[in-house]
Length: 621
Image (cartoon, rainbow, N blue to C red; front, side, top):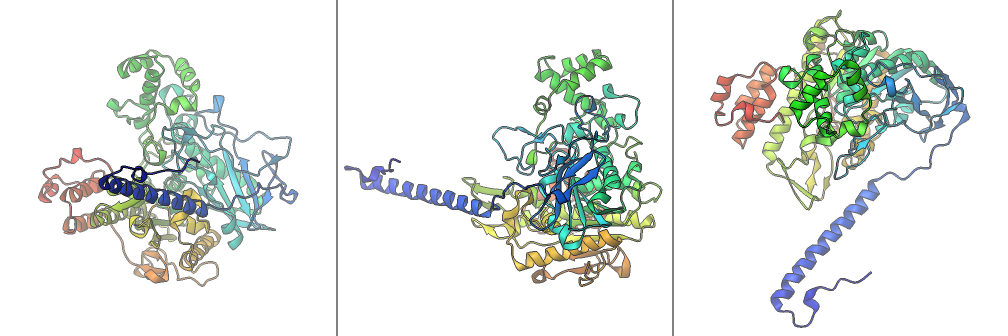
């Protein structure tokens, strides 16, 4: 390689020129050192590459879809990955309720996770990030993964539903082997259709079958995965009478959908809702144009985009007229003729590749068309089972930590907060609003329904390291999704392994959380954990307590707490808060927190000193 020779070393260069070039060379060298060091750190942080798993004939099992054979995991777990639980939803089965898998005459080797469902490629989908959006996954994606300890028989089953805004993610993002072997559980992780393929209710697709016509294909996939679990899990050592559904973010939302769906009745017996919340969507939002009560990405709006993109119409108006002239057969043929790539080209991917699409339609068959409080405050309106509801203290920071509105960066390497006080305030109120809707309101409704087994937690762990001078303990703190690694005892999922210090505190808290989750799977009560050695976790309202705080001894440890938030108490706190350094941020936080709750008060907003910023001018995030 040719050696770099700075201009200042050449004869005749002036002192000024030599000084300038010397400084430039120092900067270049510094950048090179950072890049090399960063690369070394990145490579050092990656797990060692593993040899492909080898089938182990002791794992041969019979399922409704035929015999499958898996392998033995590093933890000694018996593992089966990429097990089909439904027929491939392709061809005529696109936008239809899932069907049982056809039986295979040959033994199927299940040594790797099945394809993820179609989605924009992203870091969180495990497919990287390109300069231009690309599509990852395959429509043939209805597969699940199973981990079971040796000689398992009649063990509790935990079925994990991944998150990702119902538009990204996959079942292989976390490995269930440690959780399964540490506490004698059968752990299942499942895919489900996402985005346009998971929730889509174009009027032309109606068949007269209420499941097919619901538009809730992703929800129905999860019901089908639970049906498969009921009918097959005994062969893998699981007890179909003790099934816990657990999930995070959209996975938690979908866990609550299982509690709300009459089709899931009897298919599971406990539920863990990690950073969730639930609200069914009026089907009108999915099947109408936006000027007729529909969502901006309703099915007809998406078809308009497709027609313009392929030249069938010159503009949105022409596309709408084109749709109106179709009969149902023409519309179906057009939609079924589009590839995932063509459909995704008409969509916009937001944070991490997620798409703002309507989902979870209250169709009256798959999901009730009722307000959330009405669903969960009546035992007759939902599947009442023991439930854990939880939230992370600093939920929004995962989405803020690289947002240029709040964070500066140099060369895409050196990050720093623009205003730490403002950042902390936004994280505080965003986290508390999430707690109101995802924990406290649901807990009050569920206990009002007569459920005495409602348990709540707040995850407070915030002991991340600093990277290149960027203090992740502040920038992330107890961020969205960071608790998942503690639950699985597996910290490399979602590409976030670098945020964990891998120290004694981290593993001590992880062991406690795995113990609580396992005891809940066994008994429907997290109690004092599997070994009865943990701080007792009391039900909501028991002895005046409401939630358990999950943290390390350095920050107060695991302890019960009596906090119970409402939107009214949160509003009073926000109005009285004098620590906002930026008045606009104070006003925007008021709008974003209360705009959709029915509690936004225009006079109160004016009195707060916010008249300079009309609420409709403030973005949703």
